[in-house]
Every structure is written in C-alpha cells, then in structure tokens.
Image 1: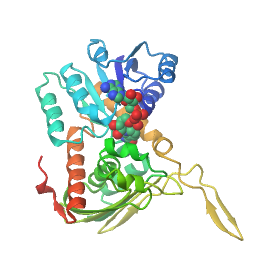
Image 2 (image 1 turned 90 degrees about the horizontal axis):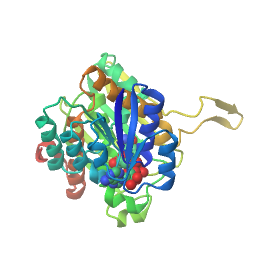
Image 3 (image 1 turned 30 degrees about the vertical axis):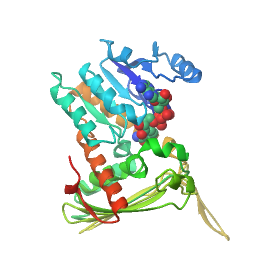
Image 4 (image 1 turned 135 degrees about the vertical axis):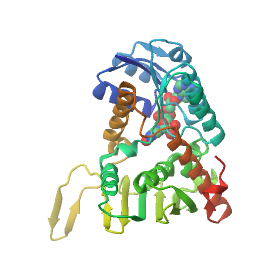
Length: 339
Ligand SMILES: NC(=O)c1ccc[n+]([C@@H]2O[C@H](COP(=O)([O-])OP(=O)(O)OC[C@H]3O[C@@H](n4cnc5c(N)ncnc54)[C@H](O)[C@@H]3O)[C@@H](O)[C@H]2O)c1
C-alpha cells in the first residue's frame, strides 16, 4: 500500500482524492493539509476516511509512512512545497504550473537531482491523458497524417474567472494557455522556436483593469518548420470548447467536444445536437483519473512520468515568451527567453 498525502483541499485536491479512492486501490490517502481548511472540507475529508487532517503540510512531509504527495495548493506555493517534499524523500505529483518563474523551477530541478532517492515528479497536464487528445497523438505517432505541417488548438472557457483571480493566476498565458502550449508540443512532437501573441479584452473590462486580456491568439513556428495557431477565450457562451487539429503531408486528424449525449434532433426547424460538457470538472474527469493512475504506476513500476519537470519548465518558457510578445507587439524567438 502506498501512503499518500494531499496538500491543498480545494477544488483540484478533492478531484484527485476522488481519483485515488475510485481508481487506485493500492494507494491510501493518509493525510490532507490546508491552512484554510473550511468546515465543509474537513467534514468531507473525515467522511472519506482520511485520518490525518492538518493545517500544516509539514506534518505530511514529516510522516515517514507517507511516500508520495499531491501538491494541489495555490500556485504560489508549488515550488516551495515541491522542494521541501523532495528533500523529505517523497514522490511528487504537482499541479500546474510548477511556478511562474524559471529560476524557481530550476530550484525544484536541482532538488530532484540532488536527491539520493530516484523520486518521481509529475506535473498536472491532465489533457495529455484525455481520450480525445490521445487519439490525435496516436494518429500522429502512427504516421497516419505524415509530416506535421499545421496544428490548430482552440481552448475556450464557458465563463470568465473573477477579475480578482487574474492577478494571482499569472494571467491568461500562465494559467490557461499553458495547457495548450503543452498540448502543442505533445501533439506535434516538436518544439516551438518562435511565436507571436496577440490579446484583447472583449468580455470583461475588469479583467483588462486587472492587467490581463480575456481573449488571446498565438501563432507559432515549430522546430520542423510547421506552423501552429492557438486561440483562447475566457467565455464561450455554449460551454467548454476544447478542440484540436493536426494537418500533415498525408492527411489531417481532428477531434470534437465531448457532449452529454450524441443525440441529434432533426426537425423542420433544423438539426440540433447537445452543447459541450460545461467545464473542466465535467470534461476532464476521466483524464484526471488517468493522470493520477499513471503517477502511481510510475511509482510501482519505477518508470519515468510522461509529464515531468521538463514539460513544466518548457511550458513556462513558452508562456513567458507569449507575455513578452504581447507586451512588445512583436514575434519572440524562444532563444530570447532564458532557461
Ligand atoms: N490541471 C488542471 O486542470 C487544474 C484545474 C484546476 C486547478 N489547477 C491548479 O491547481 C491549483 C489549485 O487550484 P484550485 O482550483 O484547486 O484552487 P482552490 O482555491 O480551490 O484550492 C487551493 C487550496 O490550496 C490551499 N492552500 C493555500 N496555501 C496552502 C498551503 N501552504 N498548504 C496547503 N494548502 C494551501 C487553499 O486554502 C485552498 O483550499 C492551482 O495551482 C491551479 O492552477 C489545475
């Protein structure tokens, strides 16, 4: 039995706890820690049988029976807790992003290298474990579309976050597009060498006043010469819109949104199908389960996580390049970004 501690009992901490309970029978959630644990969260933790319910995550790190931790706390705590967890000899699953600064991510990488144990470190890029995006990747890997020439990724949320969230989140590139920047590398199998980001405030002026944009596009050139386009919107009125297409020398592969059902109603007025599932907690529940399953498989089989610290670092380099491009109104080469 692998004993695990969860650090951060908010939305995603509870999602990952459920994934362990329902899909990882060889793991036991021994403890959970959150300094701002609400009564409801404490009752939930007790209800699902967690014995150690703490405010201080150090109690988890100091427990020699706990082999692995899931870091699900707010973004600004990830790097520090990662380093302390690695130094305490724990395997780490860390939610994205590892940090907003490349220097802090380098500190986490240094701690991993310095550890005398061969620790696993997985970053929470859940979309790599989604069945629709996997199907695209499998088609590309199998050579079905030949050499990759274009990648298009659309990622649109159903509703914007509160403007207050924007400041701490690092903005649309760090918080939201980071998944798509990782997806671009994953689907194409190539690195971004240059990108041009544009952004606008089209949805909520308060997001603009908080210093961010709510709509963004990125066009990119990849290391094999292929071209890519990403678009992000904080508000798609029809639901969570998550699609991608890879076009190549021998064909094209694209996916569609998951809907509550595939029923299509055809009448004299038209043909109507269901809207996409509402948001990430509905759309990606199976992907969250699969990434947690994969993390524990890596521990059990002593294999390297598919999404390690390098993917975490490169995604932040890309997000920093996007921010620079938007601020300076010009294409930015990745070689301009340190790290
Ligand atoms: N991969 C994904 O799809 C995905 C989805 C949602 C959130 N996230 C990431 O997960 C993280 C948490 O997001 P959320 O939506 O669950 O937020 P949330 O606000 O619901 O939960 C965060 C929790 O962390 C707790 N916390 C803060 N400091 C802490 C500390 N020092 N020790 C322990 N707990 C601490 C807070 O009290 C809060 O309960 C963010 O970094 C976010 O980017 C990833």
